Length: 219
Image 1 (cartoon, rainbow, N blue to C red):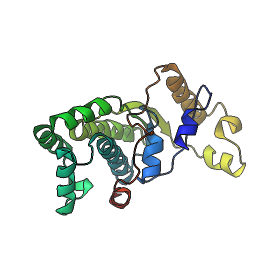
Image 2 (image 1 turned 180 degrees about the vertical axis):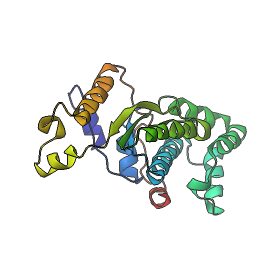
Image 3 (image 1 turned 45 degrees about the horizontal axis):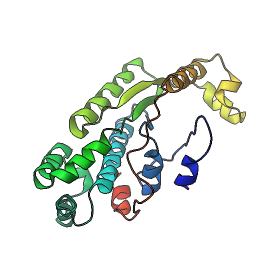
Image 4 (image 1 turned 180 degrees about the horizontal axis):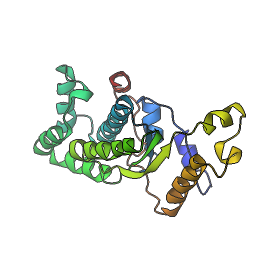
């Protein structure tokens, strides 16, 4: 399915992915190097967004470390010892991999370098909550080595509920509303970025048998 989607002749392909970290969601997210993570200001949602980015990195890692390599064996030993993905501290893990298996480390670094996710903070009610984006970006940069680009925020608007009841998109129901204008601004930002970044994972030869159940159980 992913290969067929990537072969489509179109200017833009937008995939609205569900929540969670099963391998389908992560793999569809990785079809582009610039997927968009949408979350809200609540602590739980911010934590889930952080864990999603972390699990995406593990997926990239899985595709970088060949079976039988020192890096793969090290990861397997951690998991067999009872360590969960959530407990793994990425900087420490990557330093251990670099020392044990420089080749696999270099392969991961190469793939991770094209992973450039973006962030949208949704459902903002208090302007102070916009600062949550800065904290989330800081956590991703410090603990995951990922620069999470902040595209912008969307304020909570009761008009959305009315539009849903009318079965109309908010940009058609009230195109001049604050919510609609925020959507237009975000769309403009996405369209202005003409750099097409291919995803960091090669789906042609990638196995799908990578601890998907463990990843999904984490969040």
